[in-house]
Image 1 (cartoon, rainbow, N blue to C red):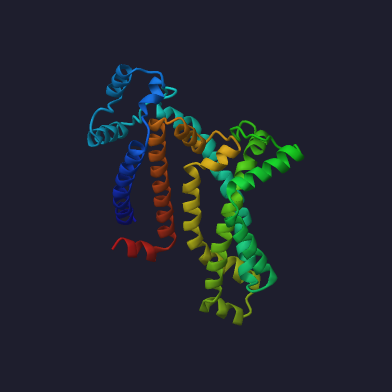
Image 2: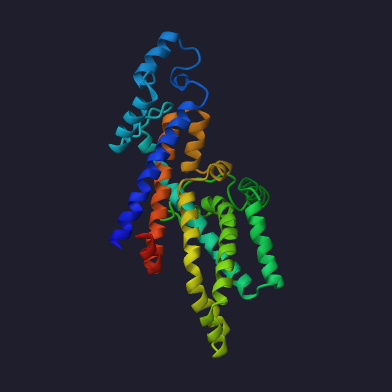
Length: 318
């Protein structure tokens, strides 16, 4: 296991390096002058030159990149050009909200997706299977901002059961308030995730249900429900685990659109506000943190997958 873990960590290093180069170039090569964010449009040429020198923008891109990487490795992501607050502090403030939203999203996605996928696989070709296929296609096709707006119109404006804008309330401080504040964006994202999971569970289950040991079990008269929900699902859950890990890592990085629709104070909304205000230091630091989180969650998923399936571990470690 240690050999496999070391092999996977070595694979992540070039990914993070290329991602850091991409993030750095993406921010520095877009049109516009970020110095104007600090000085304002009325600043003189002398004032802009002084700020550009203070921020190090008058140096070459390679020098700026290695200087930035050096500071990142020491834990310094820089200060926001707008609020002057450390980017690390801004990310730490928003991360609990995003973690709570991600967990709620995955609970909804799994609670809907797994039963739908099992039902569709166990009744392959029936109207149940076709209904689940339609649900899955619909959840993947409808943009999340449309689902979010409909949710707000129905439950916030018409029925007035929930607030039209969400705020972060820790679940351990006020479970009822946290539920009302989180259910809107969590359902919006969970609706999409449930379609993905239902589709993978169905495909995996159909494959497993066609294996010899399942047919042997049926021939011996083993209860069909026991075969499907105990033996087959246990084997079919391994490929689904990878999908769940990817979705979990994706939403831990925030959801720009959904968090903005619900005015939810997570990482996604922080990045969107920074983009709109051209606060490139916040965008740069936040996106890099999101990339690192995503790669680490994928690493954890791979390790868990290989732990449950030793054949994968043996194959990947060479």
